[in-house]
Image (cartoon, rainbow, N blue to C red; front, side):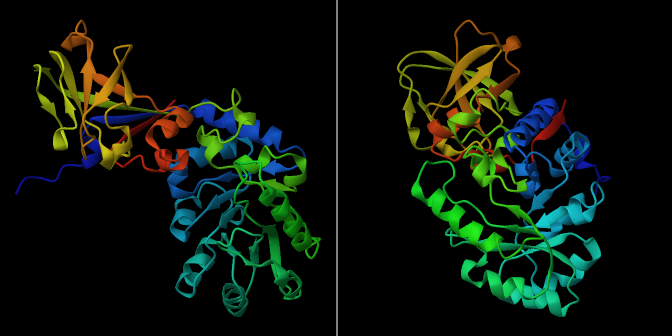
Amino acid sequence: MSDPVDPAAIPSPLRLRLDGAALVENWRTLDAMSGRARAGAAVKANGYGLGAREVVKRLSHAGCCDFFVAHWREAAEIADLVPAERISVLNGVLSDELAAARAIGAKPVLSSMEQLAAWRQSGGGRCDIMFDSGMNRLGIEDVRAGEVAGAGLDCDIVMSHLASADEDVPQNASQLARYRAVAAHFPGARKSLANSAGIALGSDYHFDVTRPGLSIYGGIQRAEFEGRIAQIAFPEARILQIRQLRVGDKVGYNATFTANRDMTVAIVAIGYADGYLRGFSNGGKFTVAGRTVGVIGRISMDLAILVLPDDLIEAQARWAAPDFALPAAADFSGLSQYELLTGLGDRFDRYWR
């Protein structure tokens, strides 16, 4: 057997360049748009796939105080970076998580009467509460707000979640009205309703704390963000091989592309295992040596195939960068902006600047 090699010491054929200054500026923009409210930050799913620890370091230094994760493992991963009582665990706390929750010290976002009872029976303490206002996802039924308020919990934030804030639909106003009725039962708690898109709905939705997520990371769900929210994630992949095709050559799985002329192609080390999914087959765009080139054939697990200009020589072509401006990439691929970000795999070396 050979001596063990540290995998982290081996360079990856995939790199993800991340703009830390743009991340901070996006959060500051959302904080300013939140008016009298303070913007927190959703850093669940490993900071939307970009690296939660690096995100939290930068945003806490910029003045962000409230951080939202989904699971207790995610809370543990950042608990040494910010005061634990400033971390909210959105999925609440299950009975087998209580010991870890107590040790970490973050706040469970209680979303059912069962969670509420378990939290009280285990000793209670600072918590947040999620009420359902019409999304029918996690949340205590809003009609039970008075009952919950009477339970005497030490509640920091009373929250709900908007289902369709990226659209101008009646559901937004309906949820706002239902949430206001809930909030009236908790005069001493901070209030939170708006996610990223909800911030753009205006001051009625802001309350005390907003919870932006996607737009911190470059997502643009509404026209109000255009020109104000910057891309921060820029993937790149090594070109592994350049080869020549002849007229009639077939390309990739199931031969979905056939060359109609002689052409030069590049085989690139990125595929659906890295979040570059099959929706980009036969049409996705990359930049190679400053030139825009297109994907041909199906995206494979680890590879994509690009058509190169005939005058692009091999020495110029070492790395290829997929077009990853989130709104355009989502429109082309049929994926959501959320999926594009959170799907970026562990094989990328991440470089912050």
